[in-house]
Length: 178
Image (tube, rainbow, N blue to C red):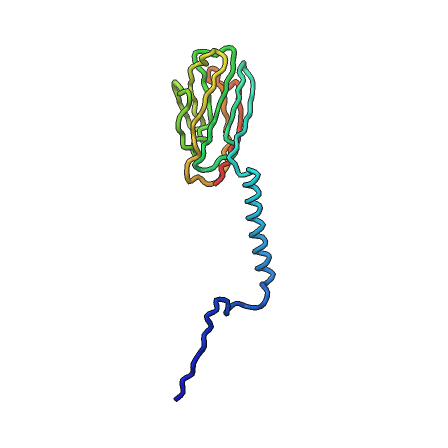
């Protein structure tokens, strides 16, 4: 009896084809590389954030300036700074913000702290003591985008209220990147 001996190759490339890749595979790889290059270029030019924006508005004897997070990422700071200027602050300054904006934030604190706050289904209203210098009240929110948040867009508005009615309003939009 004679045994037949099978010789096996140990080469790691022995089972690969010698023919060139199919057109669909080449196009798929090129598209994948192109997408990676676009993401890298966007990151290099700081398109993917974080970034701050600002807006302002005036009316009813008040000027409202707002610095807000224009592009924010999960776990990153998302400060909101309001500067309210008026020649005639009353006993308090009422500020109204949309309540849905805070759903995606890990809220830390307001500086200075509001003396009162209330809310309804749509709005959160903060009552601040008047400005120490009698003319300019600067309020800062210390917050972060909550960890684990996926991308999205949050539009909001802030208003200074006089006897419960908005006298000056500013709007902004924050893009949350994953």
